[in-house]
Amino acid sequence: MTSLDLRVYIEDTDAGGIVYHANYLNYLERGRTEWLRARGFDQHSLLSRNIALVVRRLECQYRLPAQLDDLLTVESRAETPRPYTVAFEQQVMRNGKLLFRGMVDIACIDATRYKPARWPEDLLSAMTLDSQNA
Image (cartoon, rainbow, N blue to C red; front, side, top):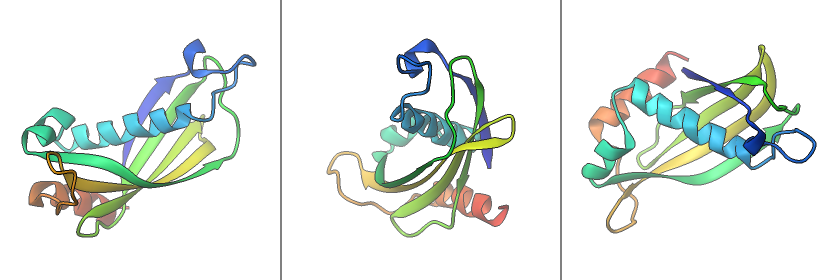
């Protein structure tokens, strides 16, 4: 699991100072990006290998609102990978309280042809290790 702390800015909120619902998806994206980085990968290096990671499916559960100036923690964990996809379980927390939960299926594709591709062995190993440590 990887954790990312972030602050809620005015640009994240609606007129009432509540985080706009779609912005949680941005938080999850940042969480997955930092999950990759913590394992020695980044988007540039993957693209240079002709690998792109795309959202295939998304399930969201909104529990409590985040508000302007809140300090949030995004927790990201990869589940057991399948040949072309992996599910990420992600949570947005404030002071240990669950605000938002997302299950995101990420597909590996060939970045040129936009067709499914098998996970590279090094990335597959990182995901497998993460799911075993859960």
